[in-house]
Image (cartoon, rainbow, N blue to C red; front, top):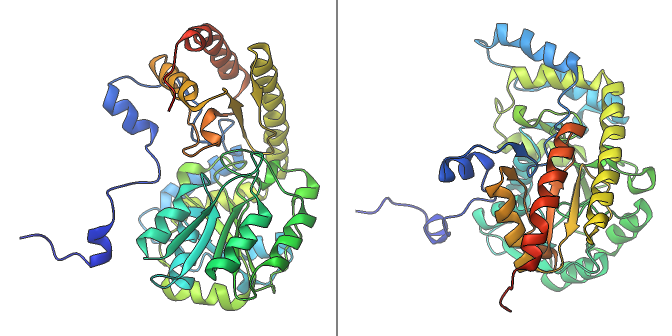
Length: 372
């Protein structure tokens, strides 16, 4: 007898948004020497955050604060909003699930870019929503087409990352405001700002926590170097935050992560150092690509998308890098699947990656690839 799944779950394909590097290591039996595919901060967390988390282990027998009050208060102060405008959760992935659950009913539409961050799609499918995908234009999110699609399908949610993942490209704050104004009045933009610490100032829109059309999503996984702690936050209108309180997992953010996030917020100099180091690394990757006759997409994130020319070559390069102990990713949809995406690492790891790429690229380039 089959388990009595709901029809929705029974009909879903067996899928996960990402195949992690650990799964690839188990599959091959070989550990990766360079982990450059997950956009973690390879520069690590603030030493103060690390120390705070070590100290918090002493109290791990106790539940953490389910209201995340101290962290929410500090985030509200830092962003100039009220406490009731801030929600803390176990990363942006958790927040995306809450937003989809709160705003989408079965059959109701959401809009995203084709090839954009896949966890949003995962939640829309998992809650029975209808997903409308819009192709990138010139390797950037096509704001006009996204807005048009939102009107065409009467979308309740639009997902947009700025800076974008997987390209690293970005939109200006002015263009984002125009985009929001073009959407249906009852449509909410999930503005994923995971990489906002690396973005130029003119790409960062001012936060208006009273605007019911925008929910800002941020994380401690990137510049703060706390990906393994799983902690992020949303800033939005009080009614939206209150609705999330009805459905969130109240003990979902552990006390160690809360203490680490608080300490990291108190060390802005560490973030500044990481941002500067990442900018230097992006320039090195761009120079490396040029030296091999390749190009890169403009990036305001902690990774660089290297344009290999065509999808078959990108896949072959990805496979060859894996065989040489290097974990990177490639976008999963055209036209971006002609690229590989490489996390900016500290200098020693960048040098090791450059040596491997220089050694294997001529072989990959010389192969013949069937037309698809």
